[in-house]
Amino acid sequence: MIIAVDGPAASGKGTLAAGLARHYGLPHLDTGLLYRAVGLAVADKADDPGFESAAIAAAQALDAGHLDDLAALTAAETGVLASKVAVIAEVRAALFDFQRNFATGPDGAVLDGRDIGTRICPDADVKLFIQADSKARMERRARQLEARGVAVDRYALFHQIEERDARDMLNPHGGFYQAEDAHLLDTTHFGIEAALRAAIAIVEKAMALKAGGPKPS
Image (cartoon, rainbow, N blue to C red):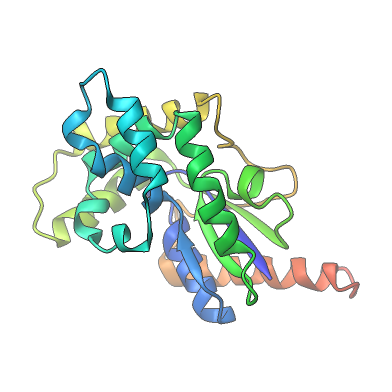
């Protein structure tokens, strides 16, 4: 079983994808970390003319060992770098095989990102698109950072989130939109447990229909 979970930053998609993976005993990949790792690798070249070629080289050299430093990878400024490298077609191409190979392993997988259901796994058994309003997402990300002792400028963080959403949606090489067959789940007013229960219910109904069972009410 392949489950694709898409959505904007801090919508809860990563937490829900991890919860679904635990529930169904499947491997989990946060594909956003791949782009964050590439962005982090070229952070010192962000304003250089060679930024694009450096990002392509970093993407081509990426392996699982580059995903270990979660504190650095999940920093707000790394998210901005991630969206900058994600608009480079050669970067996306280099990371495509990494994601596909993970998804098509013998046990299946849960992947979360921005284009899993549209580009990476258009044939996924179940697709979810997770959303929440920008203010709720800002507050969630702020609490995550503050829990790690990071001082947060909420005004700046809110605009970072909105700026990244706009860049990702306008990315001509991306697929950041709700797939036609994806199930929408708005987590604005949900806690983690309630959101996970809702996500599991969506997966169960979708798989029942796929198996040819009675249509759920």
